[in-house]
Image (tube, rainbow, N blue to C red; front, top):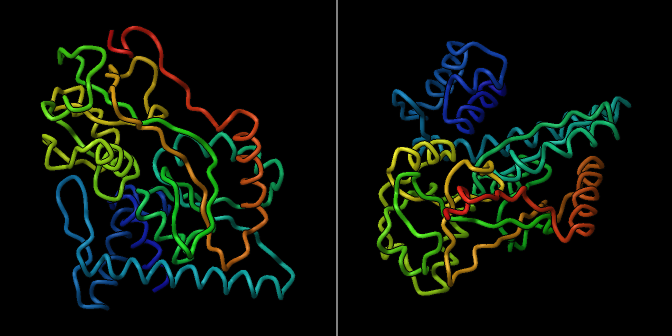
Length: 308
């Protein structure tokens, strides 16, 4: 049952049986069998399936919350018994939202491996809301998210600075800069609820008097790459972290009258000691932030990117 729960969590994380199979080192039919075992045991349907993606049902969402806690407790049990045996297999589990997980964290993993060659690092990537839930539930040791963290259960530290920018379809004629209120006229593609980028944008717009009802939202998508494809196809404009845009990838339109800067934060449970590997990683991230005023993303440049 534990293995089935692990596979279930991977399917929920990736939204795909195929990707979960790759992550677990299983065949796709084997992943399907694990899900069938759980659905048969609990008597509920856990996923709704389409030709391209799977999504959690309400019962699946409830099981995910409990499964994360069960697996976290089991990891603690294994670690405690290993310590009694004097083995001490070291595992560091990190949850990260898309930008820190794909753009910031990888450059530090090599240094972490040099410090502790026997340390196994597991990285789970999801949207910010999910990562914060993992941290609260103890399913991960450390969380990296694209927002400031204000939660009495969690300790947090800013580790980097980022900026969200507006991009347009290459064929859409727009000036290089727009007043923020002109967003009302643009077709917009937003990330899914729970995304830090979405939270940053909507909070910043609210501060200047724009509500979601003021916006022409034409689509909501859960994958940055899917949003980039939609922008290239002319569906609409979208917001991205500068870190997630390669130089020249999409034209950027500067918004006047709104501040879309944000912090990248590390967070962990206040009532649990951080594993030594997490302490070392935080020290390296903190040194980078203090030494350079915050870890900075590679900044796109050039006329095409700036939309001029």
